[in-house]
Length: 356
Image (cartoon, rainbow, N blue to C red; front, side, top):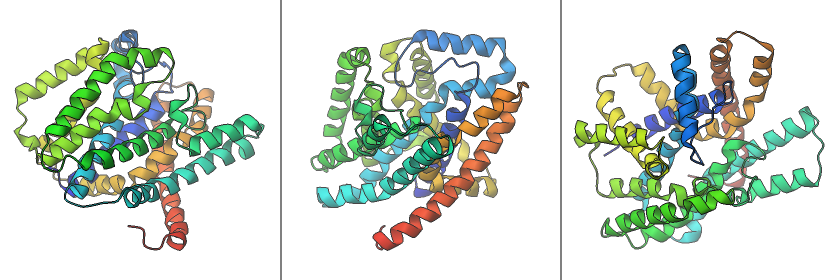
């Protein structure tokens, strides 16, 4: 099983990957990624760019694959919630209240930061559409409305989706206390729905992967492996390589792509478990633990802090500046995340003194 320390380190690794992805995938050449929608040509474009410019492997790799870091977070959410609540009687109100208290205050702060930057610093006209976009974002329904999930900051789609999964978790955990069989049934049914309806939802510009449905399999997989106390060290190398192969096929075929989100979990976490015994650096482990503890705040602010660096990049011509500015971006994001955490904790201590 994964320990609390393991989950924090994995969160630390995942948020580093996500922040790097959110920065790198906006730098030319922009070839996109198969995150919410699938297009085999996107991977072909990525591969062609990599072959032509292998010296930019880091930029291209994280630009295309970095979004899978979100899947690790979703998996760990299902994994951690199951361990916390599997043997407890909980009320829906208290459970959702606790979840919202944990994520919503920092979300509001991040939204306010975007509003200040856009409409005060940049002096973008504040009109009825702007008000509507803010309200839709705060209401956590933006990812059900075509073209609205990214209107304030791209990463904000996650908040709507994860609250949907929290609601489903409460419903699911009530009748899965004795066995993993109901969870396996939910996993299979969710994939059936995705396979059958995925193309339709794409046609109306609503990706299942912006909502609970597309991410439910990974979330439930976390619950299954937590309940079964799965030992990741026993993942055979042959099976692991098979996962890698199918994952690669998932970049070229939409049906394999539907399962690539779960596969990346079964590739990444066993690899971490295998390698962690060979990494003896206490400083690295402490840094990743610290980053994992700060991950919620890093996620909230990293997207909205990219704009100044992209402006500088537009004025600079060297192909190596993106890496230098990426380092500066990381430092800036850490500083702002720490400030946001202190501010959130200061405010919340008065409003909800006993928040866990």
